[in-house]
Image 1: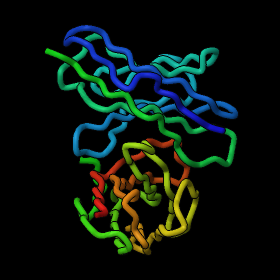
Image 2: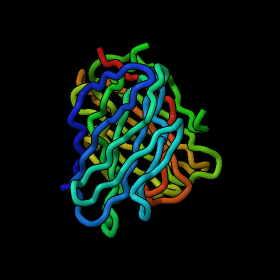
Image 3: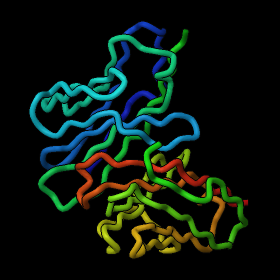
Length: 115
Length: 114
């Protein structure tokens, strides 16, 4: 079965410090991987995706993510956190080479950046 | 603003009732996805339509149904509502059918069943 795990319900970080939001996945075949962010009372917004190629993917708002096939992980990172980064972050996976069309989302990680 | 619109923004109704949620995709997008977000279930894929045809089905209850019309807007019908159906319902759209493209999400409809 396809699944995504976000092991941390919440991540706390001080403004200016680096942040990491963790994601691991389990799929049949090679995956497409995504990160989305949800601000309060808003829909999800796309941050970045990994399809193929370079394992380090750069996305919106200074975020990046590293695909690690051996560890089946796709952790979201940012070198210097902003208070405005506080939001709910979702990792999602869509397996390649299957007829499996839908995205499978993790449970979400709440990021809280303190001033 | 993603370009995806959803109405209504909020909906309060009683158990046993039926409601219809509406979604208009981004201009040019042919595929619409419906998701349910609740505290206990997280974000769950319900169903996908592409150019009027059902494309993929997820964890959609038999009490729920959806359709996509010729103008590409979509409606999600929820009937015989239960307290547990209270959730945020999102639609998303993409230009093509396959979900390897990033999806553009609407602001959601918050459904409260009393």
